[in-house]
Amino acid sequence: QVQLQESGPGLVKPSETLSLTCSVSGGSLSTFFWSWLRQAPGRGLEWIAYISSSGSTNYNPSLRSRVNISVAPSKNQFSLRLTSVTAADTAVYYCARVGVVGVRGPYDFWGQGAMVTVSS
Amino acid sequence: EVVMTQSPATLSVSPGDRATLSCRASQSVNTNLAWYQQKPGQAPRLLIYGASTRATGVPSRFSGSGSGTDFTLTISSLQSEDFAVYCCQQYNNWYTFGQGTKLEIK
Image (tube, rainbow over all chains, first blue to last red; front, top):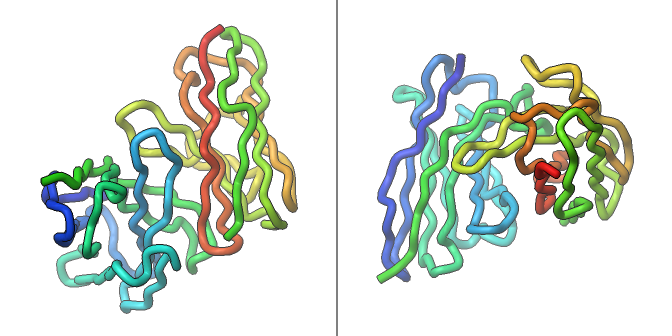
């Protein structure tokens, strides 16, 4: 059974950079695409970015200028960096796996979520 | 961006009854549509993908239908553990989600 676990600071100051890592166990990063998503309080889910084990990426156009996603296959991890954060970036951040070969598929495995608050 | 609109926002149903939830896309997503169940403090759980295929381990009381822009999730006989928030997601053109329908006990 594939398991994902997010890690990183729960509090980030405005204008600084949010950094999170997703550790994957029970399976390899290869073959699949891996995503970051978030859910602001009382809001729906928002896709942020995806990456493959070979480093192929794509980003939500609304966040593209501030987001970077990277992968470390040897560690079975992938990471998110979001720069110049504001209170609007306060959310639960999830990592998840696209459950098919390729990008066009649902998310079948999810991390438990990491609450990140942007506040001074 | 494909906008996903779910209705109703809240649905009150008695245990044992049927629940019908709707999801509409602002443009055709073919059958590239998934449904998730989300309980407080938990990650979403995949229920349905391809508009009508149940994910592994999902009980047969959950069924999905539709194609193009209009989709339905039906729960045939509600159990206590089914009261949660349900959201739809399209993955035809990047990924966007509906705002969710809260299924509450009547």
